[in-house]
Length: 414
Image (tube, rainbow, N blue to C red):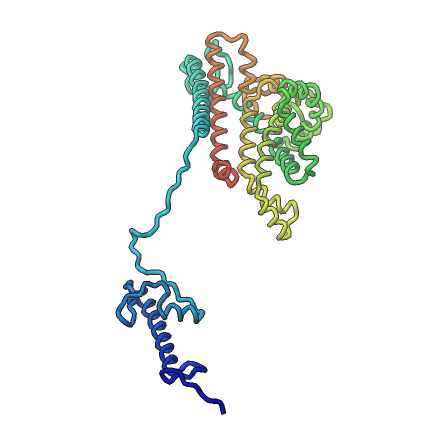
C-alpha cells in the first residue's frame, strides 16, 4: 500500500487541496462580478470599480487574477461603446481642398478667358448687326416680319417670304438627315465589326469636310434631274396635302412639264440634309459609344436581342446626343448659303409648296443682293442677317437646355 505524503498545510502532493480550489473559485467569481459591473457602468455612463480586495485600484494591465483567469478561460471580455456622447464631441467630416499648382491655375485661367472671348465675340457680332440694321428697322418697324416683298429702295421690304423658305428648307433637311444619322451612328457604335469602325468613322468625317459648293454642284447637275420622278409621285398621291401640292399640274397627268418640279425647296432640302448628316452622326456616335457597358451586358443577360439592347439601353441613354446633334444640324441648315443659292429659283412670295419651283432663304437673299445693294439696302440686308442670327441662337440655346436634362447630357455636364 503506497504511502501518502502530505505537504505543508495538509495539502495533497498529487493535486490541489481544498484551500487552493476555494481560492480559484473565489477568483473566478470575482472576475465574473467585475465583468457584470463593467457592463452596468457602461450603460449608465459611470466608471466601473476596479479596486482589488485590499482596496488598491487595478491598472487594467492584466496582472491581477481576474485578468489572468479571463485569459485562461478563452472568453474575451465584451468591449462596450459608451452611450450618450455629447453632440459637440461627434466627429465632423473634414472638407478637403487640394492645393492647385501653377499649371492648374494657368489652365483654369485659359479656359475662363476662352469662354469670355467667345461670349464677347458673339455679343460683338450681334451688336454690329443691330447697329448696321438700325436704319432699316426704324423705317420698317414691325412690318419687317410680315412683308414678303423685297424692295428696300422704295421702303417695301420684309423677311416673311425668305424666313418661311429658310424654315421649310431646314425642316426638310432635318426630317431626312436625322433618321439617316441615327441609323449610321448606331451601326458604327453597336453593329459594325471593330476592324470596319475606324474606316466608317473616317468616311463620315470626310463627308463633313466637303465644301458646300461641291454639294451645290452635285445637287444642281445630278440630283435634281433624278429626283423629279419622286417629286411627281409625291405630288400625284399626296397632292391633297397643301405641303405637297404643285400648282398647274393634275394628278396622273403624263404630259405635265418636269420643269415645275425643279429648283424647289425639296431639292435644296435633300442637298442640305446630306451636308448636315455627318455633323449629326458624329455627335450621336460619340454619345452612343458612352452607354454603360454594365447595362449593355445586363440587357443581354436578361435575354434581350441586340435591337432590344439598343432600344432599352443605348437610345434612352443617348437622348441628349440625339437632340444635340439634331439641333446642331438644324443650325447649320438654317445658315447654309452657297448650295441653296445654286439650286433654288428665288421668289419673294410665301411659298408653302415644297415640291414646286421657287424658294428662298435668308442666307441666299444676302448672297444675291449683297453686291448691288444701296446703303439703305445694305442696312436691310443686315436686318435680315440679324433675324437669322437671333433665330440660330434661339435654336441652339433651346437644344442645350433640353439636352442637359437628359441622362447623357447631365453626365457630360458633370
